[in-house]
Image 1 (cartoon, rainbow, N blue to C red):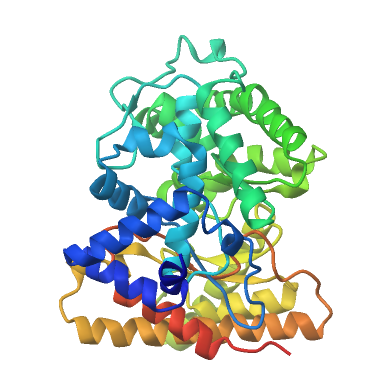
Image 2: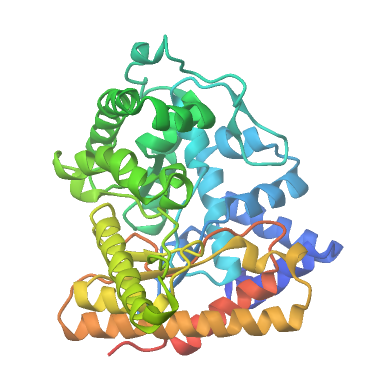
Length: 435
């Protein structure tokens, strides 16, 4: 046990995972011993250690990496991993984070798949990959959508989610976060992405009726149930399909956002509901006019672009009231998020996307590592600036259960773990020591 626990000291665990990823046999043996010990509960005391609060934290979604590890070490399939043993799922999630040097422990799972499956949607569970809906067999159509009722919260998926949350809270002493799809994304999965997009254009009233039905029949009772079972729970609704980048800013505001606003504003548990993954912010202005008015037009465009972006950031804050977040798909410069976070007195999260650390897309590894090093350094300094400003202003509770800090949006078996190590190192060095 003592020798194994040495791998939980950064960067020994990341180096071990890198050797495993490269096919090292001895690394595979060591990794299996670590996971055996973790699944037996031998590291439980370590999982409850509080995360350091004197530097910028790094969090990550990494369940796909763990799936690959457990498939190779134990032969577990996707269905085995996600559904067979909630305690095993939580412990393997926590040990993988600690091996990577991630100290602010979180818990993620395939939110869209679980949300659809809980309602009875036909699913696909590829042996080695994350589950998803069977797009050829949508649960709802124009004739049946009103027949959908409240799901059975004693069913398999809701019970798995609750067991995971309770186990995570018991092992870490942290407030748990339930991840379920938001109304628009759930509608897209169980009605069909294309069918819903066509309906947005041709039958907007039907889309509003569908989303209202889902909200009242599924989300209100589910959120109520979760808050009653786990009083200190946070509920994160995932809504990538409803993002500005996919359906445009106007349709995002008109269709995806209102059901979320209803859940946040109209129920006693609403202050613990948020959506953090709306993506697609960009500095867009009107195209300029004639050459004679070029300077004035460009100046006005810049102003209108900034104003529009600030307005969008503020609007998204109404859907994620606890913090401001910039994801990798948000193309505006991070400095404007820093300014808004300080002005609005909100903690800041900055995301680093999966493609930036994907080893299959890296042409020049040294160059990419330097780029990641600079990005992580800039992000750590920016988040530190915000956190120090909030601390000086007397803003309480910077240790929210949300991923405030640097958020690696996905770590999987194809991620370059040396890049992950670089991100964590830069956060520790350049995000050090709040006042």
